[in-house]
Length: 448
Image (tube, rainbow, N blue to C red):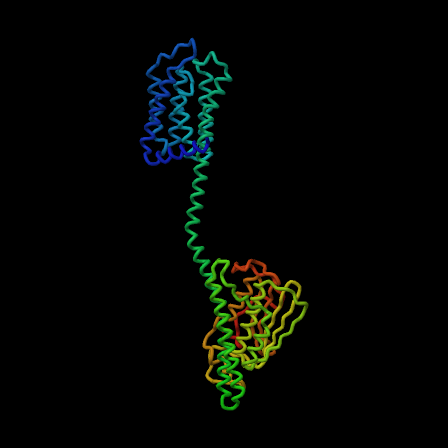
């Protein structure tokens, strides 16, 4: 029943918004008829007032004032109340029909104005009509209680209905505003999600391609350097170069396959994401370009979530890649420590640092690697990508030169990610002193 009533009410409001003047004239004519009929009513045995035309004039004035209720609701209430009080004072019986114009004016006042205005004008109008009814001669046969209680409840009805209508309109307006705001922000949220996904894909492809291409470049340079002096070693390096490029193609294929994967259960399963279990392969690949990597583990190893395992491996991989590309060092050290609920990883080397931004000399070490001062003319995205990976799972990362020489990358990762893996801006937890807020990459640690 209420649903049907609301439907008809909505249709009437839509029609009233489309043709306001027609609706106002029809309502005023209907109220005029009700007020005229009410002026002719009397109590049984009582004589009607002598001023028949006066009531019609008063009701006509009050109904004409209602035509301005949209722009002047307070004026409409005052005029209709004054006309009704005069009519009651002249001896006309106070009936709901005679109160029709006042009730309509109070309803529109409660609908179009604020609560304070409604309260002031409503209470004043009710008090004036109750006093007029109490002293009216037309209601001498009625007790004083009935004279005052009747008008009070009849006038309270439009005020309550008007307040309900105003609250309903405010609610619908707020719902519409929220819907419009959601529509405006939907496209922006979609762009933000696309940007975040593009950054994640770019970071993954960088880690896959940059590492293997750096190793392949170093292997090719070493082979060229030793081609004449040590053919046997050159052959071994070229064999390792084939394995490096094959591994790069496999990882690139797996990454692209993951991007193309659909929700079909019958789709071919992809190669699992790399983790710390593949550190021996990474150490072997670095050894093929003349970089000796030592790995030490402290604490009792504990199982890692797939996201933390992948992040730890990629950070170690990128740090060792930077060593092979930019540091004139023959050895690197990887330390993995399980401390409480954190996984601490440190990758360091003892080689002299280079700025990686300028350089005029071409220095080549014993394994044929060219100094980064000439090879890398500008900063890359290696350290930035490592830092983003650590922050994604609630960790911290620091990269910078060591006081005793060389370069060091230190990260602290939670054993279990502190936020879902899809959230790219997870709030980092408090890290140990060794992995406090990350710093810019200084000389000697240029990223790839």
